[in-house]
Image (tube, rainbow, N blue to C red; front, side, top):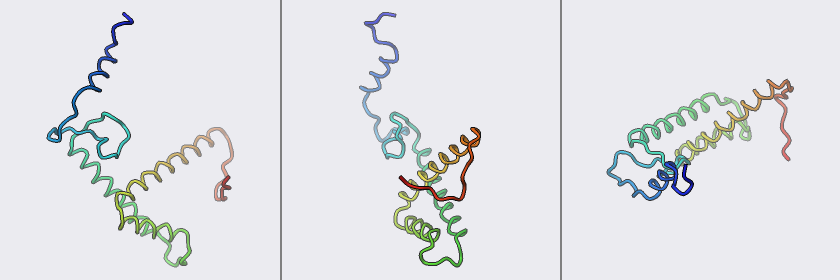
Length: 136
C-alpha cells in the first residue's frame, strides 16, 4: 500500500466531512439534531425518531404511575420514599422531558450497580446489603 495515497477510509471520512448537510425535506435526518443521542452521523427516519420519543414518554409515565401506586399509604411528611415520589410527580407535571432523561440516568445507574454486584458475587466477595454507605 502506498503511504502517500489516502486510504479508502480516509477518503470516505473526507467525503462525509465535506458533504453538504441534508435538507429538512429529506425523510432521513440526523438523530443528533435534537440532542437526544451523543452519536454523530447517525441518520434515521423521522417516523422512527417520533416513535422513539413517544415510546420513551409513555414508558416514563408508566414508571411514575407504578411508583406512585406502590408508595406507602401512611407515610409521614418527611418520609424519604414519599418525598421522592412527590418529586417525581412534580417533575412529570412541570417537565416530562426532564423526567424522561432523569429516569434514563437512574436506570443506567441501577444497571451499573446490579452489574457490579453480580461481578462481586462471581468473585466470591461478600455483599453487604441493607447497610448504609459511607460517603467520602
